[in-house]
Image (tube, rainbow, N blue to C red; front, side, top):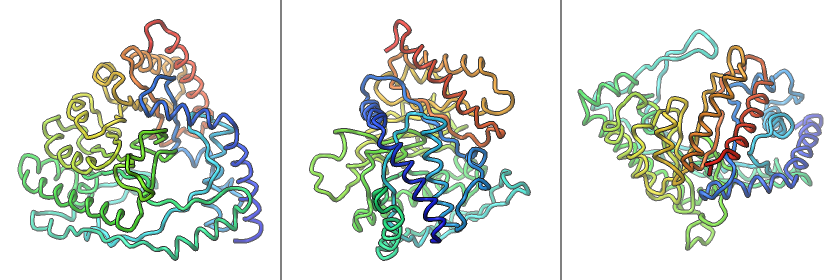
Amino acid sequence: MIVKDKKILRDLAKRVKEAADNPLQEKRREQWRRHNALGPGMPLILIFPEGSWEELIPQSSLKCEGPKAGNIETALRRTLYYHEVIPDDQPGEAFWRVPKQFASTGWGIQERKISSSESRGAWHFDPVIKEFSDLKRIKTPRITYNEEETERNRAEMEDLFDGILPVQVKGAGRISYHLMQQYTLWRGLEEMMMDMYLNPGMLHEAMARLTEGHKEILRQYREQDLLELNRDGTYHNSGGNGYLKNELPAPGFTGTVRPEDMWASAESQELAQVGPVQHAEFALTYEKELLEPFGLTGYGCCEDLTRKLDDVCQIPNIRRISISPWADVEQCAERLKGDYIFSWKPQPAQLVGDFQSEMVREYLRHGIETALKQGCILEIILKDTHTCQKHPERFIQWLKIAREEVIRGMEKPGSC
């Protein structure tokens, strides 16, 4: 790494360290520990700009010359952006994460897509599994840990951040299962949905093969000590984090991480338009089997789970449930109450077009009041923000309104 790039990164790291050492961060951690344990407290807010990051921190604004240094610079600047521009409730941490490097042999099948002519346009499925016999091509991945590369990366980052940020080597801390997405990329969305009626045995066989494959991957993670505790700021489910005080790791923990010491999650967005019976038969049956070994679990993403919550609540150790922009918040709040984390995803499209403050306020007020009235453990997650139309200030405006409505909701008689 060239001297100029190193100086830029070290200066940014000092600012990150200063922000992370602010006493406010520990207060935020404690709020999340209480929240994730279903304790009383204010609803918490997280913002994930996702597709809008390029508009918030354009590539042209980066100072580093080398590509690797540029990636590190991007990560540091994004961390600082939260502290300096849109301070949501995600705590800042004063360390640099070096992931354990491990390779996978893959599943034996390579997906194909028909790309759009536009840079960020929609793509189309190009199925590679066309008949039942093609399922034999699905192979169980073999995982190999590359300790030498991991140590090389650790040494490089320790040299870069020496005296500023401690470097922590981390294994697989985010365990999330996406069986339908995985299979649909091979089979095609329409084909998979038609199989529920015309060829259900094929779909069941595919889900069974994937389930056994993921079980074997988890076994290999355990065998090679690649699992990592995630009771910290590790991203969980489709929003939220894993901060906990006492619930994890599980009793008997001696230092080697087991599934029962961790959070894990699953989702089936491809079944958003499928009824509860088919969702339970073709997805939850297998997802529950995969999630059963874990200490705490979460479910859902952008799919509407309103009519599926009775089944979702049967998932072992379920704690966090995603309430999408298309869900019926009244029905969901009445079902979940204070027994699970009500992980509400407000409509991100409100950041596009003319930003209508009063419409945003009315919408957030309704969701917040509805959840609090039922005693829900509410978190508000703004994500899937594919663009802010080059108006970064909209995130700040949205956050300000959300905070005001949270305070108003907590002060309203009858709120929990």
